[in-house]
Length: 146
Image (cartoon, rainbow, N blue to C red; front, side, top):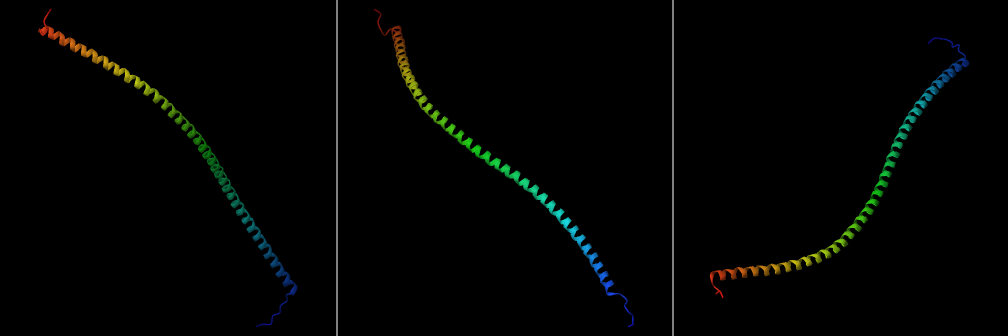
């Protein structure tokens, strides 16, 4: 080794170290600031996306609520319609019972008429048969002429 003397003063060395530390600190601050800015930007983008998703969920929730309300109204209307239909059916049953009675009376009246017509037709038929037989008997001479 050689005998070289160091002519640096401690103060200058410390000043140089401090300046390097300061420059490193500035660079680190800048990098931290840029990282914070990038992180903030990304968080803002994520927040925007979450806001959009939240709006979509709100819309879907509103639609589901409207569907539930519509379904409840439809059920209420159907119940009302079913009640009305039941009342109409009951009314028709009552009308049919009344109509059945009227029809039964008409059928009984027609039965009596048909029975009377059959009796009349039999009488006429018997009279015709007797007249034809009487005419045939007179024609063939079974009965003498007076």
